[in-house]
Length: 348
Image (tube, rainbow, N blue to C red; front, side):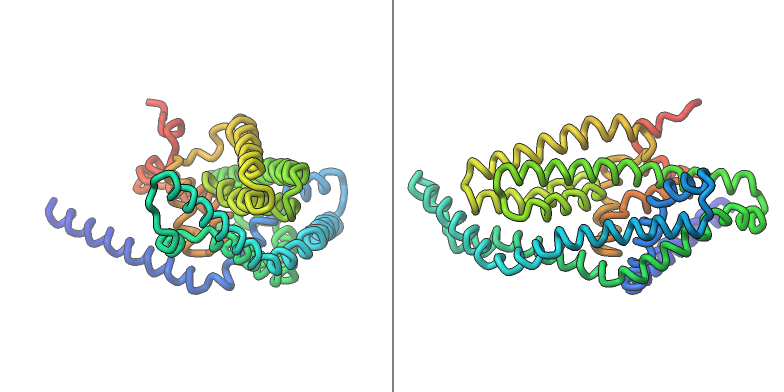
């Protein structure tokens, strides 16, 4: 009997694993449709707090949503005006930046050769060409532009999501059998995600403004562009700040040399230590409850499935998965593995 149960449990595991692979593959192929929808949900979560605040002040739902949508449009237009021209200019100047980095790399290899290190410049540039990093930055900006081409559909979806937000709990009460437990789980998921996104948005704005100001003082080209990149990649845990810093630091090296490069790097490090390592953890506390390893792996996984938007939403998507697993006795052990060390210290 025990052997039969072991075989059946093993078969069940394989079926579940195969189903998971099939579903994830389907999501990856359907990403052109899913990504705009997820981005709409992401924006709606951020906007839900001001929506309910306006409703508490007596503003009718449709008017409150319209105010929020108009605010999003104004912010988007301002970002487009500030960053759009910079993106075009950066794309035009990209070949000269790549040539400058090539010269810097060749000069460094020549200097090392004079010091007794025999290094082949051709081999180094074949395996590591820093000019490709600047090209990757241009691709990131073009990817952001590709997302923004769906602006109208995204805003329309945000409008309808916010319109349904207030009545969603009522619908759940009608649909669900165990209403009390199910609504508590839903509130827990929604509360965790809203809290995370709100903190990340505020700290991201602060990071972007400080980065742009620091680079402006140094005279580095396109400071607003690098500030915008720092804001967006603040949503990407662990390595987001590193990705955002690399092109700006290299540009400082091209323009002004090693001293300016080190000063730019120092600015990024100080800003991210103060905001990312001191302020943000104190505000965030244990709300996220994911281990550092899981955060990194979720970044890689969701980035592979959904691209840039998947990287930005990797933590919220994993939080949803973790909370869903916590509320099932059969999968609770997986949620414990996903959790941080603090969240694993459960009471006896």
